[in-house]
Length: 144
Image: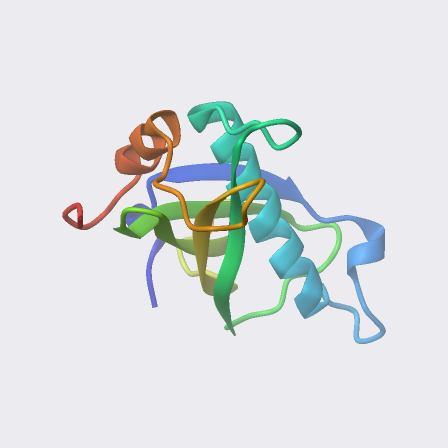
């Protein structure tokens, strides 16, 4: 289990009334929605990803989430993001979902993005601006 201090970027994510399920806690599918939102906000804001007309886009190729503790509306969550591995056309993100101000995560996840040419859907090297943004939150040495 990772603690808060091991993540390089954070984004606040308020829970919504609709996020709770019948059992009174945030449903597991909402965790993936939080992670996807944080990833894309980071890529757009920090890396210049153009999701509408850019020639290179990222597809999720693989993901995993370990649920550790419940969260529930009206909790305010903070999603930690770091890069565990940065390749030529792919990146492995590592994420932690924390209740505001807490060090132990409610969930830990990893997601692999493969960057592709929008027209051909073939792998494409990570664009320079995105690569630079990812390198800033990388926790291990760069890999070719």
